[in-house]
Image (cartoon, rainbow, N blue to C red; front, side, top):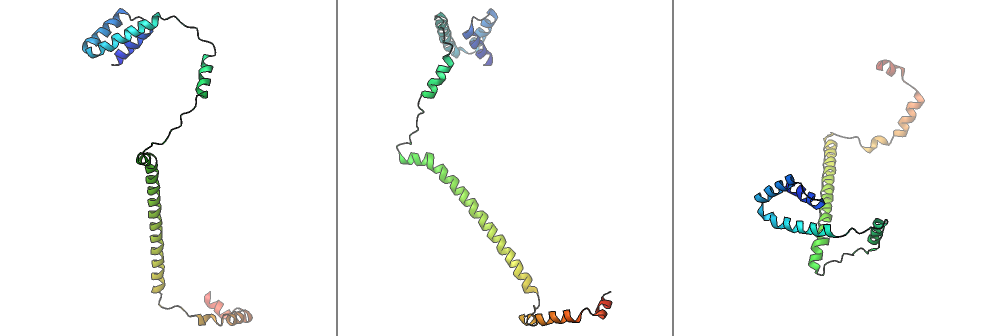
Length: 162
């Protein structure tokens, strides 16, 4: 197929060599369904060759680009049928929003479950302690602190610690 296409393109640009014409005839013998298209293209190519060359102005490209820029952009109107409009434009957006909402909800649930498990672990640890001192121990805290600062360090206690 690539060989046929390259030969067809060469025929658009000019005459084929006898070897190329022979290859083209071989290909057409294998693919007779393409013969009508090739003949039509050949007649069209000959008609185009007979046309006189028209001089192109030097600013042709610039003028074409300006015409393209001036041409208004076609505004796409939504379909008249509301069901079609919903299915084409709104449904994909709703689906994406639903997926994002679901993922967020799942993430929040997992986070709350992890926090709850952490709280349960903390309660288990606190419940495992046999007894904690009550608030009575803190009533005389100021007095105990003043006694320790007025007496100074106990030399016997320091000797025992060494």
